[in-house]
Image (cartoon, rainbow, N blue to C red; front, side, top):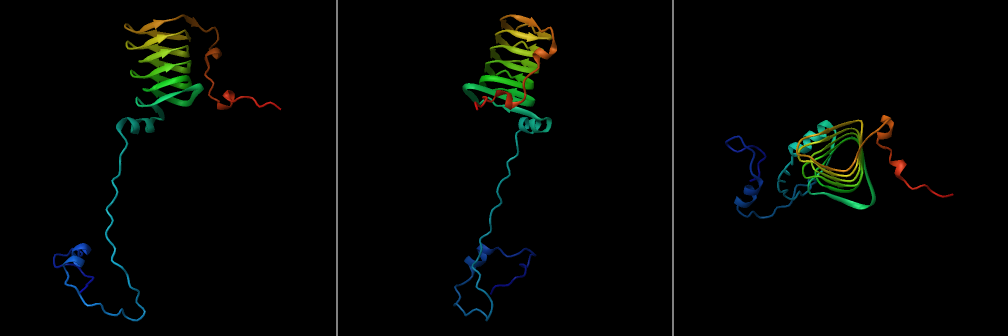
Length: 185
């Protein structure tokens, strides 16, 4: 009735079909000392979702991404990254990082400070970096403090440019503790 072997074609028997296709048998007493085991339905494997190409590339090259569907806003918000940050969403707050790229759909309202900043989207606020690049789709409404500035034809810029006398003036603050309120004793 219930064999553990293979079918004649070498495949293991299908448990669902085995229980459904067998005629109803009279219950018999189990052998002495053998436990009664209920039939177990096979479990379907769960699909594995693979990351998108952009996420996989970001993970491989240590890039943090604020995606186009993400909005970060609030009072006194500061985003800090010690690697590269790609902003394709909206940030209403300050950004401090090693390298910041404002994507075409990216919008930042606040100060952007980094060693290197590339703007493809919109920035409404100050931009402070050793190297600042405004691409043809860039729109910056605020002052730029830099050592090296590249503005492509087509970029829109409304503000003042100030070249820092000392490069240390442009160093971004990457220590979160520097932004914490001081405790009174």
